[in-house]
Image (cartoon, rainbow over all chains, first blue to last red; front, top):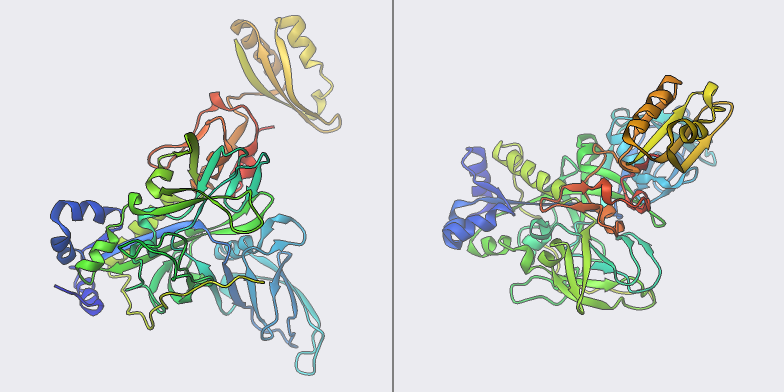
Length: 381
Length: 133
């Protein structure tokens, strides 16, 4: 029997909703079958906690008297973008500090604000009739500024290629350290817990979907950038290479440093570990089938990162389960594999979201608009 | 036996000929792994010491009696478990397998295996691993 999101929300409100994680549903469906599981379970929680460079925050710090049109802005010596209205700004996670270089960046500033720390603000403007002031040096705190919301243009990749290196030189990448001569593999995504892999054709995840974002209740704001829904898929609609992404938004004032952490990748730069949880309503048997995806069902390409000119060749097509086992056989060579993602944090988020829904603290939303299917990627000429 | 000791000197003892004393009086073979001595302030000395266990114990007594702080060290790195998010980026860097993840993705460090290449320090995105040197 099919359920609607409204009916599921009514069950949440009455305390009757059955909520399980995307890890737990696999065993439940094996035990009682797809049909019964679809009737029994209302919501499956998914999550991920990985480095997501495409992260940043809009801030409005409030006006001074006399006013300053903030055109050049630094937060703890990290430049924030000021090419919007007078005291609005965007601080990007990967922006490096002009004082400390790649060891400190926008991600650190965002997290220090979330932790309640004071952040030094320096801003400059040319001085106008309506904003005569030309500079300011002061300090801001999250609870003292007006708005602060994370707006991440590209998070929660639907699958991500694994990385290796066949060259004779060690590579320092956003996928971590890749040892020479095909000595190790690194991989991301949270496998069977991954939000978009549990809803491969975006039946329930779309614009307006309420999500867990770094401890706050946030939303899917738009399709993420580099949205590539038009990739090749298997017979169950699962993408065979990285596909959709999410643009997400959420209130920094509600966030917790437990679920968002700055990252520094050696000789690459600053990034941000972002924790995202997405509840998937079990509308019918078809939906239940898709959330039963297992690590062994997930196709992962292992790419050669030593090739920088042109497409990186695929060294092997493996499954997520193979990568997770810690060793992958490539042409007879056993190569160590390790993650660049917080599996345990992802599990914690899926559990937390499950509890929040069961405690009536988190309700599901109907999407406002679905994502486009068949979207292609353009390259820069 | 072999052991590794980190000696921290207060400013008034930075001129003490410690290594000489360890050789001469306690019949030990010290191998200096790292030294950082500033005569005006303080210093630290990381030694690998080889010798009879009783002699090593006596030498530690002598060092502590002289006002030198002595720490026996198993490994060259310290992992800040509060900061660690168990992303396992350090595991990628650790070719020797001293750092690894168990089946539950808990980070495990086997100090005995560590060859002190220090690559894990660079690899950790959280900057949660530091050198004891």
